[in-house]
Image (cartoon, rainbow, N blue to C red; front, side):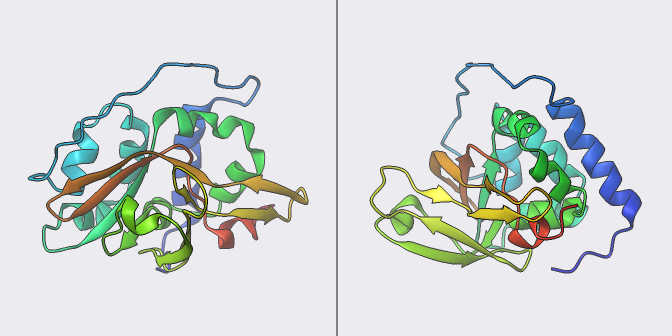
Length: 200
């Protein structure tokens, strides 16, 4: 997926995320356990996102991309959505390189990277390492080898600070079946490798 948005669009999204995570002066320390409802078989992926507690920040990011909203509402699609928790987005204040990378992306690309083309359940993810194609155009790593819960995403090298950032996300709640795919709740925000390679 190739973005056609202006730099002002990037700035708007970055500022929106910054409003969630703060200035980074202190880490997010909330230990509140977020609860999710898993019976959404008659709802679309977007309906499920809208009605699930603990995902409001991610939904606001999705809502900045009318194109992706329409995709998630399309009942003819068969997709997998990885939705980041509010606490996962708030914790971005501890990952400066991540925020640098997000400056180079708009809502379409960020949201599309959280959507895989096809339906992938937790059973599909177990016992192996493989890659799925996202609507953003890059592949997303799934690591279910030798661990209880699959890891989503990869560790990328940030050229701006020459350190490895952890962009892996743990699967918190999986297999929420929707009318147009499957919905998973993940711990961390996903950032494409191409974005981290251009961080400055």
